Image (cartoon, rainbow, N blue to C red):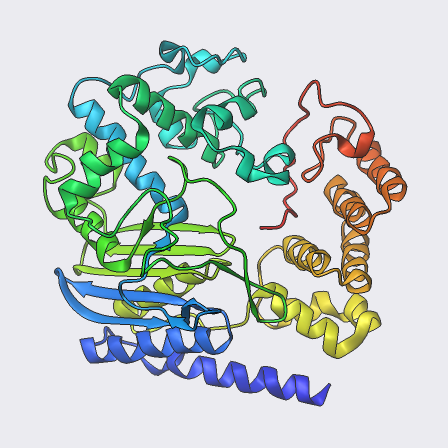
Length: 479
């Protein structure tokens, strides 16, 4: 226990030195030193594997790479390494939409019903292109149980479209906001319809070629000398190979490096290469008259971040082949230091902190003391999500006793939430106890009769999902 406390204390002191050392706007050497320090701290935690590029007014200030492009082959990451961009793809899709608007083939007020895609839900006819771009359409996200069980099955836009085409809307279009990857899949299909070209060709001709992005492709090229391999950051602070686990599309994807991605945002914000820069619609769509544009992506083995400082002329690009939003944790701290001379302390990932506490303190103290320790150590992320992610990872490594300790603790914290019994049921199913899984899920249905599992599309055999249930708003889902 003493060793554990001393370790936390040393980490906290070390990680806070730089955070409080500066209080004014720094010079470029300060920025270089601090960027190196932030990236190194996260790399030393076993977390960050990737590349960084910082520019000011299109001139390089700092670039560096950490970790491995391929761990098995001992190929280090470099500035040329290609990483998956995740949801940064959505900025590319938005550019393609605005290009079609400039050509007069689309209007942001065009209704979904104009494109005859097959949506029949109440109010679906009121969904506009603008709603889809802004995540205000009422369409839910794509990560339903059927998709999660085997994402690689959905290898075309048409298959992804069919997945949720009959699901009821979450709200009347325009009245609320709910992040929806699925909405961007719909935008991709609309782009193909109005242009008569495949989505990948639109990217190549209208963005990659124009911005001279010679190292960027829609899909991975596995024999490319600079193609990264993806790794997930586990609860025990190790990196584990995951490879490609989803097909790219208008909602997420692209393989690119920090230099090419810098070219994209430079072309977008400072030229007419991609869009007419003086048009009010284009400027408004990307907040070009504001102080900052940030874009981020994530998934298993994927993390990406871009910070465009429109006031001081800095651009920070961080790409990683490790996950859990590591890129934006680094980019945000670098940008904070550039602007203020300070940045938030570097600390271990929440699920890793939870596992360390569990391992060092034992199951009894974990259940009795962890909630307080979590808060006392400065973690403010929803503890239910942290515990669920830890439990799901423990299941993948078949650490059954530890996983059940975590899920049972989760149930004790949130006994009125149907999602926690879904997670516990999935734990039983993962271990092979289908009957206990089914009985456990009964508790979810007792709390919410129309609840649908986040993990098993047939609700553990309780009833067929002929009619979708309501949205699961208590988020304890894993990555």
